[in-house]
Image 1 (spheres, rainbow, N blue to C red):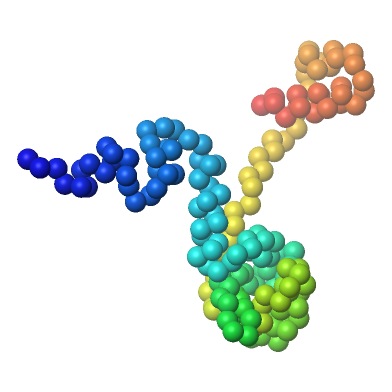
Image 2 (image 1 turned 90 degrees about the vertical axis):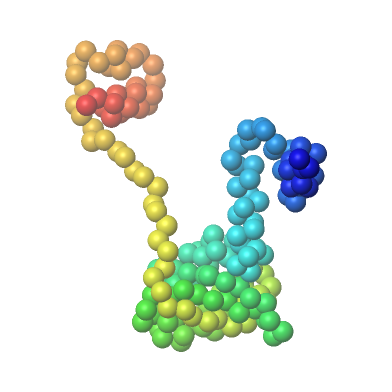
Length: 169
């Protein structure tokens, strides 16, 4: 039975994914080594050469605008770029009056003329999950707790006792 070229590609090391696939062949690598490449690919596909526009959107646009809209795509055109924002239904009208100021803020942040016009698409913004905060309520320390016997600096003793209060059920 003759082997097809598909059967022999993985054995000979010649495949369509190039040197990266060869380096990872039958090896475990950290996820972080691929995460940067995947992130850059996703941002580039959406037209964002500089991902800071998306990542720092709240700082660039301000908290009110960031609550109502978020960047989706940046397309280059002959007269400048067109930034597409996904806006909460009904907010596009409000934000339409702020287009010029928003363009100026974005271009000032990026340091060059990148955005010449803004388009809006209506839809619910994607909500980023906030980091989990799991603070246990502080419990009173029993007199026999080892943190009470610490004889070092006062600030460190207070910190140890605060930690001990959090660990107790």
